[in-house]
Image 1: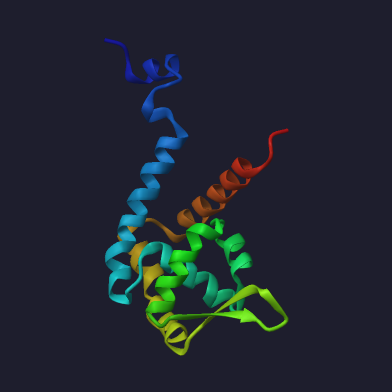
Image 2: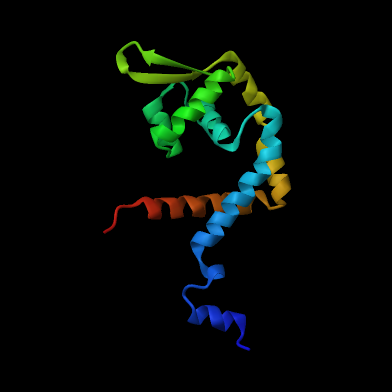
Length: 153
């Protein structure tokens, strides 16, 4: 039988050699780690990402929030509705531009930030990886995202 390493070099379609497979499994696995950590906050992972953006940038237009999160407005809208129903955000028309919808945190949404400060260290602990290694990984993944979103040359 051939050495598995040799077989993958000869097979460009080997599953374990695919970047897309590694990214997909890593993404699902890491997001699954967040579930029990976010549950006490009453947030799903996508809602947590919205809150992170708002804690950093609020008030922000829905269009700008969509751009920050790299989500289309159709995906973002139901997340915002659920966060608004939970009393964490408020969506209001911009008085200077009635077409623009502004998103801002409620008092409860701002208060939730204190509890959310426990999330990053909990995830780092669950991963059991060095913080410098995780920062390097984040920088590399950002490079992958930039490369993947560039228009074809």
